[in-house]
Image (tube, rainbow, N blue to C red; front, side, top):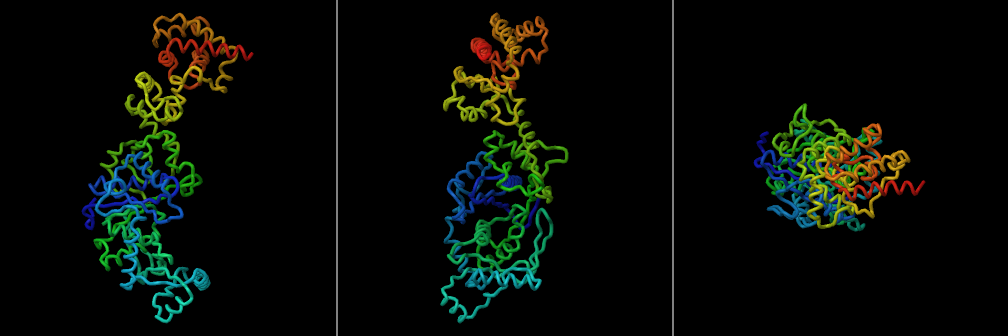
Length: 501
């Protein structure tokens, strides 16, 4: 893609540190990052933390942590720096105050003394007269006497931008030509009466000063674009920034259950939940990329390197995209199963540690055991956290080993216990504790001699030694568990059931 106004490309991702990061935020970051990387541009990470009542250091730290977990690298921003810093808006108040003053001095903004009650009253009058509500320009051209009178009443003014009385048009990179009539873009507030700058000022000012060339953001911000376009022109007029207006592209809504816009409060929206469940960053990002973009008509699975190579804004679909958790899980499972066994073993360690199955320092024996079991559980897993239930039986101490009570009720009834005793006797006689001899002994004792079907024969044994009906393949599990521990668990299962009878 070529863009005559933008060489080199500079995009920004500018979240607010409020609450937990959500999937919509990650999708926006991904599209900006891929756009910049595809075109050899600069990815700027900026923190919009001017809302002191909602922003928090905890949310800021979590935001950076999640960005690192997802694998995003930024060229400018927190912890990296850059030529246009600082990159936290809470550290740039002097910049905004200076720009606001210059806009007022240039006659491009003005002090507004209207009270909230007066504004609501005039909006009601506009609605009654069939006019669109919005600021009516009451304070645009106050006389000195009027200003003196307002000040005498103790009123503190806001700074309001003077929007030009003309249609504002732009060519959206995703949606095509868009126009807003002037009556739908009333003068808006830049600075509160207490001197605190608003998003309407700080966002365009930072874009101008940081020489942002393209703004890719959610469709929910489309209505603010004409106001910002007008302000970019005003900033250029007073010499703030390069004078170039960024190109805008508004990304489609992400829809959740009931065909409603996915809210950050929806459970499937919370990025921390995906990390806790053990989604792979590359798997989650692969799915999020599909929420409005495609690499090809017949292909859903791709790496981030492949996405960067193929990404163009022209392939972004303006129609809403529906978040499908099942498809997200399926794509993650595909990425998980493509991991080399050794890498899977490394990636499940934090989840086993969180469950108390591994200590802070993983021993060589534990690492070898993980490497051996990884290929056995890989095809059965959707997320990394599932490794806790899938192979936890190998790492739990015998004093802490438990059998799932529901599985025990179903399979360790008197008939199941009889099978367990038969298995214990057969395995006691196995000299070489390897998968093949273990399988031979169990098949001979339970299938050939007792005539049981494999499902009925091996289910009770599986529950007795792994604690669950779902586990890695039984014979390989027994080999990895070891003869002594396997026989001890079989004996314990039989003894526990016998004692409860």
